[in-house]
Image 1 (tube, rainbow, N blue to C red):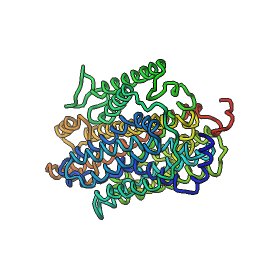
Image 2 (cartoon, rainbow, N blue to C red):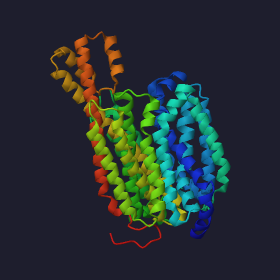
Image 3 (spheres, one colour):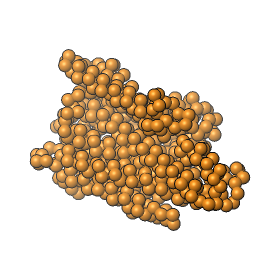
Length: 540
């Protein structure tokens, strides 16, 4: 396998292999952010509510999380290239269905289910196909380019969605995805494949346990903002006085534990496990997976907080918001591509540490720059640093995880890796959002209660109405609501001032959590190897 990879790596570098795989990664990530700026438009077009479209986005994430590990095993059984191409066909059918969707039901089937299933086949296969098409010394650059394509898609998603919705229709985004899928399928024939497993069997019990465990855990995280993390919000489901979020997280963890226990039993009986538990005892692999979790935790938290600041706090359009995120994309791509090319023998541990420091520095710089009088320009330098950090991590982590196991295990590692990144993304977004809303609410209520222009009974009503959390509103949105309620000018101005200050407090709190997470991640970089794949490991 290694020799074949090395042979193919030369042609891969000059052909269309890497752009093909990067295009697949770009598409999978694009759906996570492209419609966030067009939710209201999509809801009106298919005759549903904003909550219905947000539910579709949530369901897409959920389906991916549930089937990512089984999707990796499918690639082992039928071949990575075949799994990749079948996944592209399923994804393309989902995109076409979504583009033509007349109502929410069809939208859910196309976007959430078909595209989610396609992504669960495509993403693990991409990890394995990079390993199969590039020699070990070329893999850091290849993985860095592919990972950068996914992160750039998330950054450009709001801009693409904004352009399409403003000048054409949101449906053209999904129609465009169909065209890209067709192009990917044309060039995918050039991909070198790996031999399939001798026993074409899949552990159905393990597949069910892993899907239910990851599904329950991710769903609990995604619903935390509506239900509360521990104490239930008003009207939210609860059991024994505790939010249903906690019970779903615990149930998910229990099922994941049962899954690992079952897999160990399958191995003991000389069966074919979905995931060999021995993989999770590999220090290099678990080190890479841990850093993947932290990277996506911080990355998706940033992509949640910064666009909110630009679009809501500053009132920028979707186009201008997307444009302000471009510095992050530039340094991310530069770092992901140039670090392996210019420093092929650099210590992965050193690069990962410096990348994590850059993430921390960017989050702290943004936290310090947020001010009531600040403009959109303050995000430029912090985003340059954050993009540099993301690119540095992307340039190393993929090669670290795959090089930790034999090449024939790369598809299984791909499934686990994408499940971990999905968890990091979900938890990072949910926790940043929860902290932001909780801080915003308490700050807003404190400002209103301390303002003598606001009557005591109005402050009391506000405390009752905002018991489940204050919405993150722009000045225009709040002014419209106050006018509709017939609020006096003095009270309206007090509310606007309190809202502006509370928004910044909420954003600062969310950024502080992300900065703290980046700091914690530094303590786990010790598990990253000190030499590139194929080199001799230096003492830790």
